Length: 105
Image 1 (tube, rainbow, N blue to C red):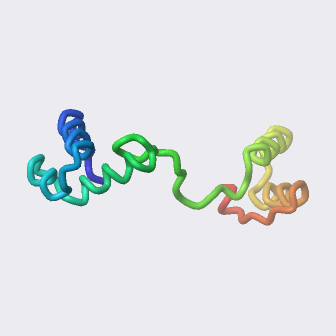
Image 2 (spheres, rainbow, N blue to C red; image 1 turned 120 degrees about the horizontal axis):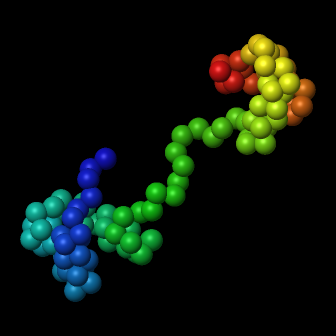
């Protein structure tokens, strides 16, 4: 990911956008890509800030929820020598979730 613009340059771009200058003109004046100026304007329209907030969690969702992990930890406190297959069986018996041993590991 590219680094963010410094605050002065970002402020100047926002002022120029507010004054109605074109993307090409702003990009040439501040020596940035035209797409960068468009992206900043779009973010201002959608979020009210020059860059989108980091609110979206990326990646695959977890298979087990927090309370299920907690119950697995409680199971392990009772049986600290349990193998992965027994842990997988416990989760299946308690919650009906079929998970692989690799997920637990």
